[in-house]
Length: 503
Image 1: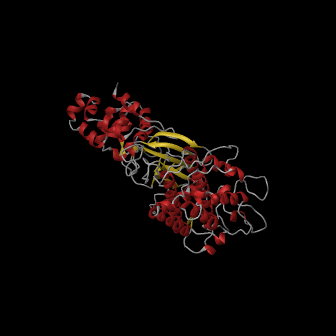
Image 2: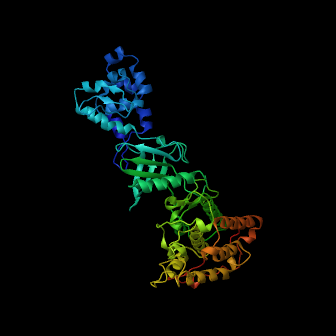
Image 3: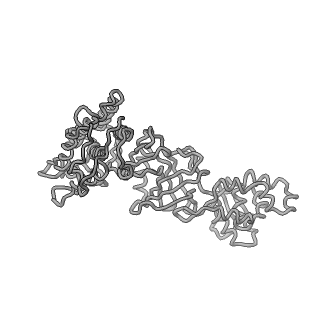
């Protein structure tokens, strides 16, 4: 196989813009002193004995481009003019009609004009981008790329279509460092934006959130602008989202999984507290926006990994931290099932950060239903809240009555009552206290609803009591209760998902 073929076959084409790139590892492995000498004539080397060494030390990328366009012998003249890898990318000088190329700092390289095959100069300008793929070596960095410059992706598949497409990708191991998978391919989710305004909002929010360094908040790998497109790169959640986790982990509940779930709720509540502490409201908390990272991807305290709040892009930041009366904000993007009742108030008042505590209360209530009765019970609970009645929003946790009156959905009240009656979830247990707090402090009117700090403190207190007094975690019973008919839906006769394993 010729040297040209070796380089050409090493090009990777997984970029959403159909741009190929030559990995840095290929340059190191292929553009060796031996291969450089093999591409140069004996006379050239005799007259320029230091030429191969200069190429090896300072111009591997330039030489690789020349090989790919069939002009490797031009390296002598270009090095004489001082062209090194650091001068790339080049562009046509002046109006572009001449074949003289220039670096970004204005240094001219005249010898391109002596090439006998004029189209090869244009080919050089095209091929040079194949060795310009960036290295992601600083978490949260922003990169501005030419429209022809590739991203260093070895995999790029569209995972979500729509207004903001999301790609599942892998960053080549030689083009990333300083991240969780340092030295290995980095699995990423890449969200695409077509308008600068929305991108800038998401970029600003995410950049500020990174300062919190909270393990239950999504990490930002990088942001990028290329041509008219903007990208935000996150770690890829190989465990999917929380709703998918509920469906995939629907076996009998061992004490280990139960305890992990409680600790994750504690962590998510603390992450919400941290968000609100920076004057930010998430605005769209739901199971689909809580990601599951298995243990290999992010540091978790158990084999199940860790849950992380994501999609903070619609969140709102505020300059000053003030109280409920003057901190509410407006956000139109949300999910109806988990929105707070004040979303339907007609007073045009912006929403407070307590909007999030309602939403996370809905999620935690479903989490508890899943822990006790399984995934199908969560689905049945969701179906029970759906209605064609105009005063009930599709699948929400509240109803609309008279102006300003938003009582909890009757099916939610019924679910809470059933949970309270479950012997594993009665007063004096961790799950019982959790359900009580959700019902009395989260799924209530905004004036009486707990703030994130109170939520975090309450759940932390429950977790500490579990450590001090393990039997407090779950009231073990001799006979595991059958799933209540309310949570069975169209699947009668199921057995409870919780067994009597000790924690």
